[in-house]
Image 1 (cartoon, rainbow, N blue to C red):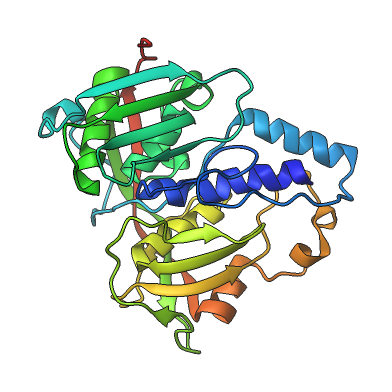
Image 2 (cartoon, helix red, strand yellow; image 1 turned 120 degrees about the vertical axis):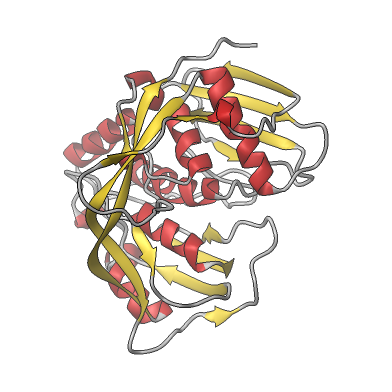
Length: 323
């Protein structure tokens, strides 16, 4: 069970923290790092088959889901112009060192230092980096080679001075293009989506002004439990998509809410194939589903709808030379 909780935590807590590149981010297998407390272990009733299934999933190296920044398009699939980040303003890090992660390394993260002078990565795949920096789910990345989602890297990039988060993300995109040769195009077509709406019961979150700092908006408070502080609704949408990895539908904000909010959210985690709910500790297996938890704890709900869905198609990417 400890293995499952570690895997679930990696796959469900990493991306939404990677999403904005916040400080103190806990990302990959095993225990969280930085500001996040380690995941407590639990005694388990899981069968050997369940544990084997979990181990197999760990080997697959699946990542997470996130909301796309979609534009309204209709009709047949549309291929946008190729995205070669060399075409963007050449905001670049002064220096960037990339190395393969140590074999068997556990734990991983991506974050800018508090002074905003660069980016640091530990034990992350290029696919994970792309999903974090472009704020997209791995399920909507296509055409990538096997190593893209299995080979992990450490990276340290430094800028000549402090920059804002948007500029740091542009620098990281340019780094992916320059050092990994990343090129892709976007295909957009109508598809199923979730619309996040205010429930009839009313908002149960506490309004907390505007977002505006580099703190992590949502952090774990135990397995499948989270504390949100000054959370923008767009960030909450991305987080929800992360939690429902078996459902590729993006979550689109239809709440009309404009502030940042504080809340706690506890729900039944999505289980890997072959793992029974009986394998969970009682305090987790009796929790509501994430949809029910949204209504009961936050006063929000998810409605199925049709909308534009973006897919990112890899045209070219290389494994980097180390330095």
